[in-house]
Length: 392
Image 1 (cartoon, rainbow, N blue to C red):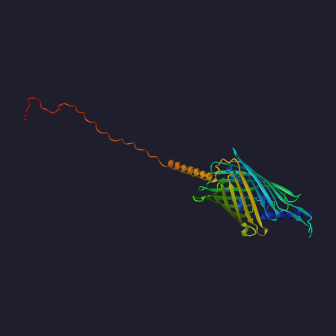
Image 2 (image 1 turned 135 degrees about the vertical axis):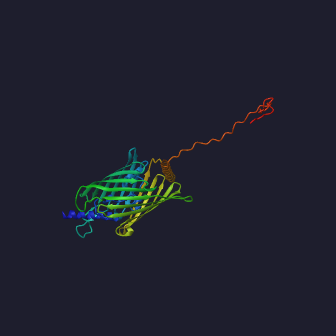
Image 3 (image 1 turned 120 degrees about the vertical axis):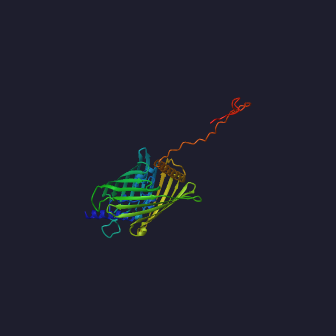
């Protein structure tokens, strides 16, 4: 019995150490629910619930799946310290009544050994792992609001004999253009659910409430193309009331070569363990037409570096081939629509004045007609009345 408990405890510490180095505390079960697998958002230190705009919204904020215009799928590979590694595959497809998506995650925490004493040969060897399956749905209500939900199944295998699983759900929302154009707000409540057994540690799902903002600055340089700067800020509050601040920003260079676009990324998470430098993230991405490749790296102190690489594919996308033309056209149409709405509202509120009747030019008096060879009439007294006598 003691041997079995020791066996489970060592496995639990191995799982917690891997999750803690990824920016988590290791105080809950199923830490894989809180890890960031996509390289793009790992480079942003996990921020971006209001910025995500592709198939990866299924893991970040499913309400943003409404931005998916055709079949999209994504794959990611993660290399952590100590031989731990994992991966994710996701896809999304729009339907007439919303966008459906699914994500599958596998994470292996590396080789773990158990020795009863100070011996070179371990008594037992095992490899703890996590498995996560997510079904996502997103839909929009009007032009400025979208909602989404995730249903999750998660399994944690500590040993060949010790496995537990749980069910969880996420509630997500997105508000477009709040207060001003291009300022977006995302809200998520993550990992509401149950697990199947009590045991070696606090068996609480990593429940968290997250609010995020994202803004897009458009800088137009005719000599070099169009540049975008997209900062995002997420505020996370866990179930034990410990806040986290996640900040990231993207720097986009369009048409570097034909249809090739390059994006640089930087991120920072606070608080970070074991030191402030471990909170920094860096990354770079490139997209060519409908294919995007992203890379992210983070330093975990004495534990070494974490590397993540992702590829996203978009099929049957009805947008123009040139990304800049699509973005610019959408923004122009949106700005024009906002201007027309504001103009129409101002016109309706302004009282209407009746227009005066149009004035006509005065008409000239009719000309008198004269008859030729006719003597003009005069007041001639009658014949014989040459004089007039007036008597008082």
